[in-house]
Length: 147
Image 1 (spheres, rainbow, N blue to C red):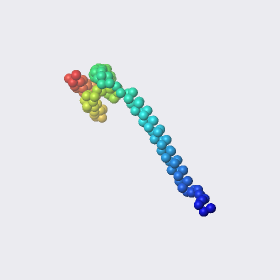
Image 2: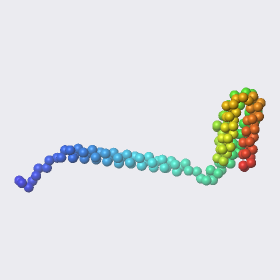
Image 3: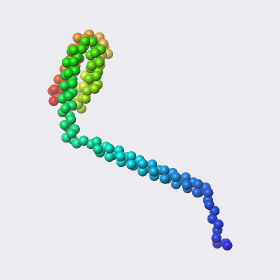
Image 4: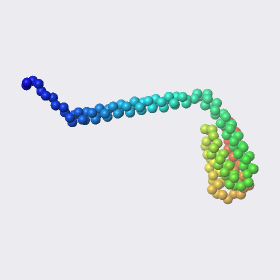
């Protein structure tokens, strides 16, 4: 009959439609996975938050430990015999010390002075001990005045 039309399947439209549907489903899956990962990261960060009182309670021991470490370094340098031992001890202590925030500039300045002494490498052991002792005295003196 003339009012019924036989519908044909439009193959190119179906093919591209399925491709678009696959892309949309893939994007949705990726967004869901990404949102779960971001949520996990935010939950981990909120677990690591410390209170202000905890932060301030940790500042005072850091300053005291730093001052004690620099004082013991000065004493241990006097017992060393060679310049290599002195530089090795200085490097170990200076680079591993936990420095208070307000002392960072003075610590870096002292380390650069000591490093300049190493590059010159013209000092004998006694002269080196005297120079390093003066640098450490200045560092310890600054710390004691600031507290």
